[in-house]
Structure formats: structure tokens, C-alpha cells
Image 1 (tube, rainbow, N blue to C red):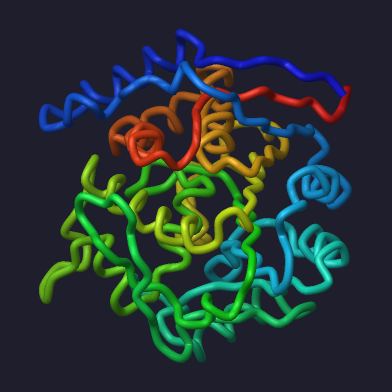
Image 2 (cartoon, helix red, strand yellow):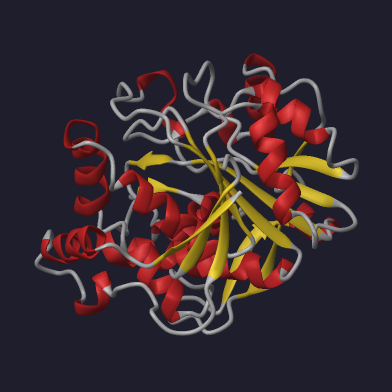
Length: 327
């Protein structure tokens, strides 16, 4: 098991600068470099893209996952080609006896807008081996956003309060509005309820569900994620699976753009910023032909603002030690 100290590569900082320049309205701080002082986080890595690999990284970050554990993942649109393999998740659940897969309904046009349609989609996609708790099935509850500049509270699925801990299990990929979807996006949008929370994040109005974009949308997501992280801390951990990385989210279903990037592996940490930072760093080391579309999607949406704003809100550090579990 080899431990390697990582600080942001010059390539990534240059790309961050490009993100700020991609929009004339981007705030000056949108591409702030990763934190360079203070204690480094630990990020575990394996190239083993399998149930065994998933269990291997989970064993390194599960120490504080006690009591009833919510397992937040994206169960996907009907027949989605890139969602996490169900057999992997089924195997992982054998290691989490008090674990329950959790989801929320969606804001966009989809069968998953309603609990009934969502449950039908779960059956179609093979999420039948374990109960899935649709957390906003019985409504929503407000929880505080500490230190937010856009929100003081965020609306999340009411059932979230039934859990003591959360494992954020994420398929890392591109995203139409976020640029990319890592652990932060998984809980920012994925724990917010469909009718109130998701509408708050998207700046919805009576005639437009998608009123916010760019850096402001990234900041809205970060503040939503902070509410969930603060609610569970320190009983929360994060896994990013860098596999089938289309430029489109699993919410695109069968219309997702073809995957051009090769699979990388699985990253895990108890630090949200570090796990998403490490994922971006690895993606940005892909060959240009594989990186191009993902990089363009991330930077045209000012996606790197996710990282800089999380650091500003004290949600973790971009400085990390990468522990290679395969060596």
C-alpha cells in the first residue's frame, strides 16, 4: 500500500484559470487554487473496479458510520447505461448491516418525479435486492445552512432525519449544469426534496425551473451539500467511482453522450473536498482525446467553482495524501 503526497498540479491550476475565463461574468474567486496550508486529508485509491474494490475502499473510511446508515446513490433513469452496477452495491451492502439505499424524487420531467414512477424505475433498473427509501415520499424538512451567503436553510427529504450516518456512493461523471457530478453534487441535489429543495437550488420560478446557472448554481449546490454534511458530521464518508464517465449525468438515461474517457478506479475519503479534488485531478490527467469533452463540459459550466467554494466554506481541503491500495 503506497502513500503519495499530492498537491495541485500546475496543469489543474491552469485549467481552473481557464474555467474563470470561460465566462465574462465569472467571479474573480471562481478558480481559487486548492488549499496549500494545514493538515492533508487522506484519499484511498484502487484501480479494482469491482465489488471487491468497492468493499476494499469502504473498509478504509467506515469508522464513523454508526447506527442507521443512509447510502446515498443515484439509481438512474430507466435503462440508464452508466449507473453503478447493482451487483457491486448488493455486495457492498453485506458489509453495512444497518444500511439503506436512499434517494429523492426529481424536479425535471421524468417518471421519477413521483414516488410511484420512481419505484417503477427502481424495478426496471434492478434495484430490487434491497429496500430503497425515497426520502421525500412523506414530505420535506428544513435544516440549517451554516455560513451560507445564498441560503440560511435547505429543504431535504424528511426521512433523512431517520438516519445516524451517511455513505455517499457516487458515480463520478459529467453533468449538464454542474459540469461534473461528484460526491458534493450527489448530496446537494440528491438529498434536497423535489418540490422545494431542488427548486431552491435551481432558482426555479413559475415559468422556469432552471433559473440559475454558472458559478451561482455551483454555489447553491455547495450550500445545499453543506447542510447535509453538517447534519451528519462526523458520521459521513464519500466514495467516487470513476467509471463510464460520460459528459452527461445518469439523469440523462439512455440519451447520455457516449463515453470517451477510459475507466480510472475508485476513490474514497472522509473529506468531501479531497475526494472530489482527487477525482478532478485524475480526470485532468487523461489523454487529451479522452479529456477534451469532459474538460469542456466542466469549464463551460464553471464547475471548478464547486471546489473553491467548498474550501471557502470550510468543508474540507484540496490538499491530500493519495493512498494506493493496489501497491
